[in-house]
Image (cartoon, rainbow, N blue to C red):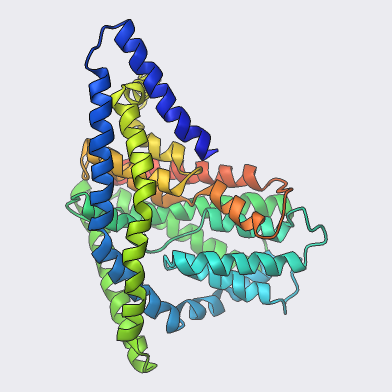
Length: 410
Protein backbone atom coordinates (compact mmCIF):
# COMPACT_ATOMS: atom_id res chain seq x y z
CA UNK A 1 0.00 0.00 0.00
CA UNK A 2 2.62 2.57 1.09
CA UNK A 3 4.87 1.50 -1.82
CA UNK A 4 2.11 2.33 -4.32
CA UNK A 5 1.29 5.64 -2.64
CA UNK A 6 4.96 6.67 -2.61
CA UNK A 7 5.38 5.90 -6.32
CA UNK A 8 2.17 7.74 -7.23
CA UNK A 9 3.32 10.83 -5.27
CA UNK A 10 6.24 11.17 -7.67
CA UNK A 11 4.34 10.18 -10.81
CA UNK A 12 1.46 12.59 -10.17
CA UNK A 13 3.92 15.40 -9.46
CA UNK A 14 5.84 14.69 -12.67
CA UNK A 15 2.62 14.53 -14.73
CA UNK A 16 1.48 17.83 -13.23
CA UNK A 17 4.83 19.41 -14.03
CA UNK A 18 4.67 18.20 -17.64
CA UNK A 19 1.17 19.61 -18.10
CA UNK A 20 2.18 22.95 -16.62
CA UNK A 21 5.29 23.03 -18.84
CA UNK A 22 3.51 22.06 -22.07
CA UNK A 23 0.16 23.80 -21.57
CA UNK A 24 0.95 26.58 -19.13
CA UNK A 25 4.47 27.35 -20.43
CA UNK A 26 5.78 27.23 -16.85
CA UNK A 27 9.49 26.85 -17.57
CA UNK A 28 10.48 27.04 -13.89
CA UNK A 29 8.41 24.10 -12.67
CA UNK A 30 11.12 21.45 -13.15
CA UNK A 31 13.67 23.68 -11.46
CA UNK A 32 11.36 23.99 -8.45
CA UNK A 33 11.01 20.20 -8.25
CA UNK A 34 14.76 19.59 -8.43
CA UNK A 35 15.40 22.24 -5.76
CA UNK A 36 12.76 20.61 -3.53
CA UNK A 37 14.46 17.22 -3.88
CA UNK A 38 17.85 18.58 -2.78
CA UNK A 39 16.56 20.86 -0.03
CA UNK A 40 14.18 18.33 1.53
CA UNK A 41 16.79 15.56 1.46
CA UNK A 42 19.14 17.91 3.32
CA UNK A 43 16.44 18.87 5.85
CA UNK A 44 15.66 15.19 6.54
CA UNK A 45 19.28 14.47 7.45
CA UNK A 46 19.60 17.63 9.55
CA UNK A 47 16.47 16.78 11.52
CA UNK A 48 17.59 13.19 12.15
CA UNK A 49 21.09 14.18 13.29
CA UNK A 50 19.67 16.96 15.46
CA UNK A 51 17.61 14.39 17.32
CA UNK A 52 20.55 12.22 18.40
CA UNK A 53 21.09 13.95 21.75
CA UNK A 54 17.49 14.11 22.93
CA UNK A 55 16.77 10.64 21.53
CA UNK A 56 19.73 9.22 23.44
CA UNK A 57 18.58 10.92 26.65
CA UNK A 58 15.01 9.61 26.58
CA UNK A 59 15.96 6.10 25.48
CA UNK A 60 18.34 6.06 28.43
CA UNK A 61 15.53 7.11 30.80
CA UNK A 62 13.16 4.57 29.25
CA UNK A 63 15.72 1.83 29.88
CA UNK A 64 15.67 2.70 33.60
CA UNK A 65 11.86 2.71 33.54
CA UNK A 66 11.85 -0.78 32.05
CA UNK A 67 14.34 -2.19 34.53
CA UNK A 68 12.76 -0.65 37.64
CA UNK A 69 9.41 -2.30 36.93
CA UNK A 70 7.31 0.85 36.60
CA UNK A 71 5.42 -0.57 33.64
CA UNK A 72 4.92 -3.81 35.58
CA UNK A 73 3.30 -1.84 38.45
CA UNK A 74 0.81 -0.27 36.04
CA UNK A 75 0.22 -3.74 34.61
CA UNK A 76 -0.87 -5.03 38.02
CA UNK A 77 -3.42 -2.23 38.37
CA UNK A 78 -4.93 -2.86 34.94
CA UNK A 79 -5.12 -6.66 35.03
CA UNK A 80 -8.67 -6.87 36.54
CA UNK A 81 -10.01 -4.71 33.70
CA UNK A 82 -8.56 -6.89 30.96
CA UNK A 83 -9.89 -10.05 32.59
CA UNK A 84 -13.38 -8.55 32.13
CA UNK A 85 -13.10 -7.30 28.55
CA UNK A 86 -11.40 -10.45 27.22
CA UNK A 87 -14.06 -12.85 28.46
CA UNK A 88 -12.98 -15.80 26.29
CA UNK A 89 -9.46 -15.87 27.73
CA UNK A 90 -8.96 -17.96 30.91
CA UNK A 91 -8.11 -15.92 34.03
CA UNK A 92 -4.91 -17.88 34.57
CA UNK A 93 -3.68 -17.28 31.01
CA UNK A 94 -0.28 -15.54 30.81
CA UNK A 95 -1.73 -13.52 27.90
CA UNK A 96 -3.58 -11.24 30.34
CA UNK A 97 -0.46 -9.98 32.12
CA UNK A 98 1.46 -9.70 28.85
CA UNK A 99 -1.35 -7.65 27.26
CA UNK A 100 -1.45 -5.31 30.24
CA UNK A 101 2.33 -4.94 30.17
CA UNK A 102 2.11 -4.03 26.47
CA UNK A 103 -0.59 -1.42 27.14
CA UNK A 104 1.44 -0.03 30.05
CA UNK A 105 4.50 0.31 27.82
CA UNK A 106 2.41 2.12 25.17
CA UNK A 107 0.98 4.39 27.88
CA UNK A 108 4.49 5.40 28.96
CA UNK A 109 5.71 5.84 25.39
CA UNK A 110 7.99 2.77 25.53
CA UNK A 111 7.66 1.95 21.83
CA UNK A 112 10.74 -0.29 21.77
CA UNK A 113 9.37 -2.38 24.62
CA UNK A 114 5.71 -2.27 23.56
CA UNK A 115 6.07 -3.99 20.18
CA UNK A 116 7.96 -7.16 21.20
CA UNK A 117 5.73 -7.55 24.28
CA UNK A 118 2.67 -7.03 22.05
CA UNK A 119 3.82 -9.75 19.64
CA UNK A 120 4.34 -12.11 22.57
CA UNK A 121 0.81 -11.33 23.79
CA UNK A 122 -0.61 -12.07 20.34
CA UNK A 123 1.17 -15.45 20.34
CA UNK A 124 -0.29 -16.25 23.78
CA UNK A 125 -3.77 -15.28 22.60
CA UNK A 126 -3.32 -17.55 19.60
CA UNK A 127 -3.09 -20.51 22.00
CA UNK A 128 -6.74 -19.91 22.92
CA UNK A 129 -7.83 -19.27 19.32
CA UNK A 130 -9.86 -22.22 17.93
CA UNK A 131 -9.47 -21.02 14.32
CA UNK A 132 -5.74 -20.48 13.83
CA UNK A 133 -6.00 -18.64 10.50
CA UNK A 134 -8.80 -16.33 11.69
CA UNK A 135 -8.52 -13.53 14.27
CA UNK A 136 -10.34 -14.22 17.54
CA UNK A 137 -12.44 -11.57 19.32
CA UNK A 138 -9.71 -11.11 21.93
CA UNK A 139 -7.03 -10.63 19.25
CA UNK A 140 -9.15 -8.08 17.40
CA UNK A 141 -9.81 -6.10 20.57
CA UNK A 142 -6.11 -6.22 21.47
CA UNK A 143 -5.10 -5.04 17.99
CA UNK A 144 -7.57 -2.13 18.04
CA UNK A 145 -6.47 -1.04 21.51
CA UNK A 146 -2.92 -0.97 20.16
CA UNK A 147 -3.92 0.89 17.00
CA UNK A 148 -5.66 3.58 19.07
CA UNK A 149 -3.42 3.26 22.10
CA UNK A 150 -3.18 6.12 24.59
CA UNK A 151 0.31 7.54 24.91
CA UNK A 152 0.43 9.63 28.06
CA UNK A 153 3.79 11.18 27.24
CA UNK A 154 4.26 11.75 23.47
CA UNK A 155 8.02 12.35 23.76
CA UNK A 156 8.78 11.97 20.05
CA UNK A 157 6.31 14.69 19.06
CA UNK A 158 7.76 17.03 21.68
CA UNK A 159 11.22 16.30 20.27
CA UNK A 160 10.27 17.07 16.68
CA UNK A 161 8.49 20.27 17.71
CA UNK A 162 11.57 21.39 19.64
CA UNK A 163 13.81 20.50 16.70
CA UNK A 164 11.65 22.55 14.33
CA UNK A 165 11.78 25.59 16.60
CA UNK A 166 8.41 25.56 18.40
CA UNK A 167 8.30 28.18 21.15
CA UNK A 168 6.59 25.74 23.54
CA UNK A 169 7.11 22.18 22.22
CA UNK A 170 4.90 20.63 24.92
CA UNK A 171 1.85 22.85 24.34
CA UNK A 172 0.19 19.94 22.47
CA UNK A 173 0.29 17.73 25.58
CA UNK A 174 -3.35 18.10 26.72
CA UNK A 175 -4.83 18.21 23.17
CA UNK A 176 -3.05 14.95 22.27
CA UNK A 177 -4.16 13.32 25.51
CA UNK A 178 -7.80 14.23 24.83
CA UNK A 179 -7.70 13.15 21.16
CA UNK A 180 -5.99 9.81 21.81
CA UNK A 181 -8.36 9.13 24.74
CA UNK A 182 -11.37 9.66 22.47
CA UNK A 183 -9.83 7.42 19.79
CA UNK A 184 -9.30 4.63 22.32
CA UNK A 185 -12.74 5.05 23.87
CA UNK A 186 -14.51 4.93 20.49
CA UNK A 187 -12.43 1.95 19.38
CA UNK A 188 -13.13 0.01 22.56
CA UNK A 189 -16.87 0.81 22.72
CA UNK A 190 -17.49 -0.07 19.07
CA UNK A 191 -15.74 -3.45 19.45
CA UNK A 192 -17.34 -4.08 22.86
CA UNK A 193 -20.81 -3.64 21.34
CA UNK A 194 -19.87 -5.86 18.39
CA UNK A 195 -18.54 -8.59 20.70
CA UNK A 196 -21.32 -8.32 23.24
CA UNK A 197 -19.05 -7.38 26.16
CA UNK A 198 -21.05 -6.62 29.32
CA UNK A 199 -20.71 -2.83 29.56
CA UNK A 200 -22.65 -2.90 32.86
CA UNK A 201 -19.92 -4.84 34.64
CA UNK A 202 -18.87 -2.97 37.82
CA UNK A 203 -15.16 -2.93 37.01
CA UNK A 204 -15.82 -1.82 33.43
CA UNK A 205 -18.30 0.85 34.55
CA UNK A 206 -15.80 2.25 37.02
CA UNK A 207 -13.10 2.56 34.40
CA UNK A 208 -15.49 3.75 31.70
CA UNK A 209 -17.12 6.45 33.83
CA UNK A 210 -13.74 7.64 35.08
CA UNK A 211 -12.34 7.73 31.56
CA UNK A 212 -15.38 9.55 30.17
CA UNK A 213 -15.42 12.09 33.01
CA UNK A 214 -11.75 12.82 32.45
CA UNK A 215 -12.36 13.67 28.77
CA UNK A 216 -15.50 15.75 29.43
CA UNK A 217 -14.12 17.67 32.41
CA UNK A 218 -10.80 18.36 30.69
CA UNK A 219 -12.61 19.72 27.63
CA UNK A 220 -14.97 21.85 29.76
CA UNK A 221 -12.17 23.26 31.90
CA UNK A 222 -9.96 24.22 28.99
CA UNK A 223 -12.86 25.41 26.84
CA UNK A 224 -13.61 28.09 29.47
CA UNK A 225 -10.02 29.33 29.66
CA UNK A 226 -8.79 32.03 27.29
CA UNK A 227 -6.39 31.22 24.47
CA UNK A 228 -3.07 32.23 26.05
CA UNK A 229 -3.81 30.38 29.28
CA UNK A 230 -4.96 27.24 27.44
CA UNK A 231 -1.69 26.96 25.56
CA UNK A 232 0.40 27.95 28.57
CA UNK A 233 -1.28 25.49 30.97
CA UNK A 234 -0.99 22.63 28.48
CA UNK A 235 2.71 23.39 28.00
CA UNK A 236 3.38 23.80 31.73
CA UNK A 237 1.53 20.56 32.56
CA UNK A 238 3.55 18.69 29.94
CA UNK A 239 6.82 20.04 31.34
CA UNK A 240 5.83 19.44 34.97
CA UNK A 241 4.83 15.84 34.27
CA UNK A 242 8.05 15.16 32.38
CA UNK A 243 10.20 16.56 35.19
CA UNK A 244 8.20 14.76 37.91
CA UNK A 245 8.47 11.53 35.93
CA UNK A 246 12.23 11.95 35.84
CA UNK A 247 12.26 12.53 39.60
CA UNK A 248 10.04 9.50 40.22
CA UNK A 249 12.26 7.27 38.04
CA UNK A 250 15.41 8.43 39.85
CA UNK A 251 13.87 7.82 43.29
CA UNK A 252 12.65 4.39 42.17
CA UNK A 253 16.12 3.51 40.89
CA UNK A 254 17.67 4.73 44.14
CA UNK A 255 15.30 2.66 46.30
CA UNK A 256 15.96 -0.47 44.26
CA UNK A 257 19.68 0.21 44.18
CA UNK A 258 19.54 -0.15 40.42
CA UNK A 259 22.61 0.67 38.38
CA UNK A 260 20.82 3.69 36.90
CA UNK A 261 23.85 5.24 35.25
CA UNK A 262 24.83 2.02 33.51
CA UNK A 263 21.24 1.42 32.46
CA UNK A 264 21.01 4.97 31.12
CA UNK A 265 24.19 4.56 29.07
CA UNK A 266 22.94 1.24 27.71
CA UNK A 267 19.67 2.81 26.57
CA UNK A 268 21.28 6.01 25.34
CA UNK A 269 23.57 4.08 23.01
CA UNK A 270 20.45 3.09 21.10
CA UNK A 271 19.63 6.78 20.53
CA UNK A 272 22.31 7.20 17.87
CA UNK A 273 21.20 4.07 16.02
CA UNK A 274 17.52 5.08 16.14
CA UNK A 275 18.27 8.58 14.84
CA UNK A 276 20.38 7.19 12.01
CA UNK A 277 17.82 4.51 11.13
CA UNK A 278 15.05 7.04 10.51
CA UNK A 279 17.12 9.00 7.93
CA UNK A 280 16.10 6.84 4.90
CA UNK A 281 12.42 7.01 5.90
CA UNK A 282 12.48 10.76 6.39
CA UNK A 283 14.40 11.34 3.16
CA UNK A 284 12.00 9.17 1.14
CA UNK A 285 8.84 10.83 2.45
CA UNK A 286 10.05 14.44 2.81
CA UNK A 287 11.40 14.41 -0.74
CA UNK A 288 8.14 12.92 -2.08
CA UNK A 289 6.09 15.53 -0.20
CA UNK A 290 8.41 18.30 -1.37
CA UNK A 291 8.03 17.17 -4.98
CA UNK A 292 4.23 17.12 -4.62
CA UNK A 293 4.19 20.61 -3.08
CA UNK A 294 6.66 22.14 -5.58
CA UNK A 295 4.62 20.71 -8.48
CA UNK A 296 1.58 22.50 -6.95
CA UNK A 297 -0.39 19.21 -6.72
CA UNK A 298 -0.58 19.26 -2.92
CA UNK A 299 -1.56 22.94 -2.87
CA UNK A 300 -4.25 22.32 -5.51
CA UNK A 301 -5.69 19.44 -3.45
CA UNK A 302 -5.73 21.52 -0.27
CA UNK A 303 -7.24 24.50 -2.13
CA UNK A 304 -9.99 22.23 -3.44
CA UNK A 305 -10.86 21.05 0.06
CA UNK A 306 -10.78 24.66 1.32
CA UNK A 307 -13.15 25.64 -1.50
CA UNK A 308 -15.60 22.91 -0.45
CA UNK A 309 -15.31 24.09 3.17
CA UNK A 310 -16.11 27.60 1.99
CA UNK A 311 -19.30 26.43 0.27
CA UNK A 312 -20.54 24.98 3.56
CA UNK A 313 -19.16 27.88 5.59
CA UNK A 314 -16.69 25.65 7.46
CA UNK A 315 -13.54 27.08 9.05
CA UNK A 316 -10.80 25.65 6.80
CA UNK A 317 -7.74 26.23 9.00
CA UNK A 318 -7.48 22.47 9.60
CA UNK A 319 -7.05 21.65 5.91
CA UNK A 320 -3.27 22.29 5.87
CA UNK A 321 -2.88 19.58 8.54
CA UNK A 322 -4.81 16.96 6.55
CA UNK A 323 -1.77 15.40 4.79
CA UNK A 324 -0.72 14.01 8.18
CA UNK A 325 -4.25 12.64 8.73
CA UNK A 326 -4.29 10.98 5.28
CA UNK A 327 -0.94 9.29 5.90
CA UNK A 328 -1.35 8.34 9.57
CA UNK A 329 -3.24 5.02 9.14
CA UNK A 330 -0.83 3.93 6.39
CA UNK A 331 2.66 4.81 7.55
CA UNK A 332 4.11 6.08 10.82
CA UNK A 333 7.24 7.41 9.10
CA UNK A 334 5.11 8.97 6.36
CA UNK A 335 2.83 10.72 8.84
CA UNK A 336 5.85 11.93 10.80
CA UNK A 337 7.34 13.34 7.61
CA UNK A 338 4.03 15.06 6.79
CA UNK A 339 3.99 16.64 10.26
CA UNK A 340 7.57 17.88 9.88
CA UNK A 341 6.90 19.22 6.39
CA UNK A 342 3.85 21.07 7.70
CA UNK A 343 5.99 22.70 10.41
CA UNK A 344 8.62 23.53 7.83
CA UNK A 345 6.10 25.10 5.43
CA UNK A 346 3.81 26.97 7.82
CA UNK A 347 6.01 27.40 10.91
CA UNK A 348 6.26 25.22 14.02
CA UNK A 349 3.90 27.49 15.98
CA UNK A 350 1.25 27.81 13.26
CA UNK A 351 -2.23 26.34 13.63
CA UNK A 352 -1.49 23.85 10.84
CA UNK A 353 1.61 22.59 12.68
CA UNK A 354 -0.24 22.46 16.00
CA UNK A 355 -3.14 20.49 14.50
CA UNK A 356 -0.80 18.20 12.58
CA UNK A 357 1.08 17.38 15.80
CA UNK A 358 -2.17 16.55 17.62
CA UNK A 359 -3.31 14.34 14.72
CA UNK A 360 0.06 12.58 14.78
CA UNK A 361 -0.40 11.77 18.47
CA UNK A 362 -4.08 10.82 18.27
CA UNK A 363 -3.72 7.25 16.91
CA UNK A 364 -1.20 4.62 15.91
CA UNK A 365 -0.44 3.36 12.39
CA UNK A 366 -3.35 1.00 11.78
CA UNK A 367 -2.12 -0.91 8.71
CA UNK A 368 1.31 -1.45 10.28
CA UNK A 369 -0.14 -2.71 13.58
CA UNK A 370 -2.61 -4.98 11.80
CA UNK A 371 0.03 -6.41 9.47
CA UNK A 372 2.70 -6.99 12.12
CA UNK A 373 0.48 -8.31 14.91
CA UNK A 374 -1.64 -10.66 12.81
CA UNK A 375 1.25 -11.60 10.55
CA UNK A 376 3.30 -12.72 13.56
CA UNK A 377 0.82 -15.54 14.23
CA UNK A 378 -0.03 -16.29 10.56
CA UNK A 379 -3.59 -14.94 10.71
CA UNK A 380 -4.91 -14.19 7.22
CA UNK A 381 -8.60 -13.62 8.04
CA UNK A 382 -8.82 -10.42 10.09
CA UNK A 383 -12.65 -10.31 10.06
CA UNK A 384 -13.90 -6.84 11.11
CA UNK A 385 -10.57 -5.68 12.61
CA UNK A 386 -9.58 -3.21 9.87
CA UNK A 387 -13.03 -1.61 9.60
CA UNK A 388 -13.28 -0.93 13.32
CA UNK A 389 -9.66 0.20 13.58
CA UNK A 390 -10.17 2.75 10.80
CA UNK A 391 -13.37 3.93 12.52
CA UNK A 392 -11.29 4.49 15.65
CA UNK A 393 -8.70 6.38 13.57
CA UNK A 394 -11.41 8.61 12.14
CA UNK A 395 -12.70 9.39 15.63
CA UNK A 396 -9.18 10.25 16.79
CA UNK A 397 -8.46 12.50 13.81
CA UNK A 398 -11.80 14.35 14.11
CA UNK A 399 -11.19 14.75 17.85
CA UNK A 400 -7.69 16.06 17.13
CA UNK A 401 -9.06 18.71 14.75
CA UNK A 402 -11.81 19.74 17.17
CA UNK A 403 -9.46 19.95 20.16
CA UNK A 404 -6.93 21.92 18.10
CA UNK A 405 -9.57 24.55 17.35
CA UNK A 406 -10.58 24.56 21.00
CA UNK A 407 -7.02 25.11 22.24
CA UNK A 408 -5.39 27.15 19.52
CA UNK A 409 -8.15 29.49 18.36
CA UNK A 410 -8.53 32.83 20.09
